[in-house]
Image 1 (cartoon, helix red, strand yellow):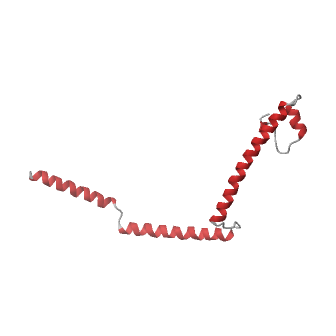
Image 2: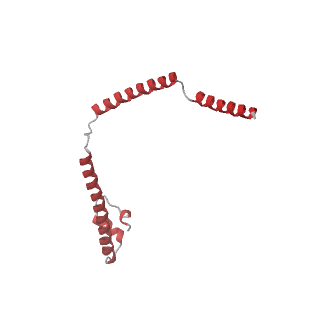
Image 3: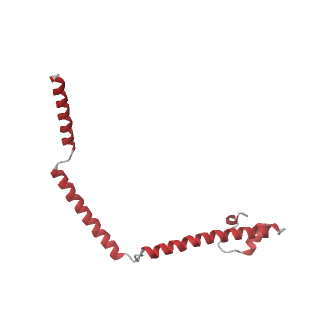
Amino acid sequence: METASLKTSIKAAHTSLAALKSTPSVETLQNSVTTVEAEIETLEETLNGLRGVSETAVVDPVTRAAAEKEYAFLEKEYARRKKQFKEFWEMVCDGYDGDVKELWVSMALPQLTSESCDI
């Protein structure tokens, strides 16, 4: 009985010793903190230098949200107009007896290719 309680005490002591050995010492922690603080200072200096050189204006969140909202609207408008154009082009192609690709080229639509409109 006494041996079992001693073994349990020894096992608990070994567990606590292992936990103490695995935790870093105060000196190690202080060295780590010093290193990290030095790294933070150098990064902040670099960041401040970049902020001073940058020609990009800082945009407040309200203006940014408004710009993103307008951009989303324009994307939807572009998709809507593209769909309308495809429908219109299909109507033109249905009533055209000649070669559709030649019609496309003869119209000389700027920055569009026949592949982009699924001809």
